[in-house]
Image 1 (cartoon, protein in one colour):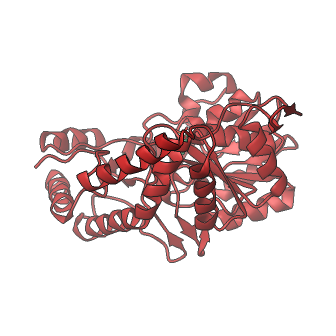
Image 2 (cartoon, rainbow, N blue to C red):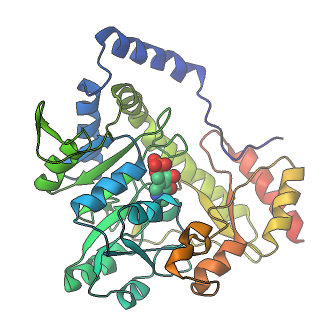
Length: 364
Ligand SMILES: Cc1ncc(COP(=O)(O)O)c(C=O)c1O
């Protein structure tokens, strides 16, 4: 049995349906802006239960525009975890602001107590990251933000559809930013992303800023960017949105099999808490002898991944911020142990059982 870590191929039925959708977009000749974008924004604001959604070209630009609209400028500080995808920190650095890292909990998400310790009079924004599709402790983070009058941007890139206390990912903060990179549960056929907010001013400015700063065709109050989503990506995502529920359900079912079959004496992972609804963009376990296990699994034709092997504060690009090894104990310990197991929706019970059997065999 060969188990790829990801499988982004589309079944024939979907390919046929998508060809019709592309044909429709091509026949209308709407490529930049268009009715699919309008539909997509409505679909996303409905799903996230926010007033507004803005279709963008990537999760990275969603975060950049979000930070700009929350007023982040040179010299400001933004608190974020050191164990995310590099883009979470890169967007802060690009604005000339300083990423201030706060360590994570055993579930790999930012620790609200650590966040509070890092607040200074330069702190402008807190950016929790909902890693793997599990939401950060948003109630505590929002409380802290309100106390100190700081804004919150959710890096919800990995968590479309996730909930905490029945409130949707992206809807807790001032701005919620999502990626629709092909690897995400709601993935496009190339780069795409989107932003949600309940703030009309942020919505209007994000629409304009993502489109050269245009408010009307020839009126530019502020120079902008080109961060719009293509109409063809929106058409594709509107189609894919119809399957999102079943994709999430399948991934959750796969996790249930892992839960039953993995030997929990050797494999650590946190169960879903009663207030959470996790969408499992990834399924990450923490294990001893991780690299040996990974090689062993590869010999059994099971490919795995690591998210992320080098914490951001230890990346060469972060050297100017003066962090060093040992600064974030949990993040660094986890970086040695984390392993992302295959969970994609094209895998069935047989595949997951084979993975579990192989892992259990390794530790015996
Ligand atoms: C946590 C996190 N933040 C930001 C991003 C950036 O999103 P994109 O690749 O769409 O620019 C990603 C995407 O991989 C991500 O996983």
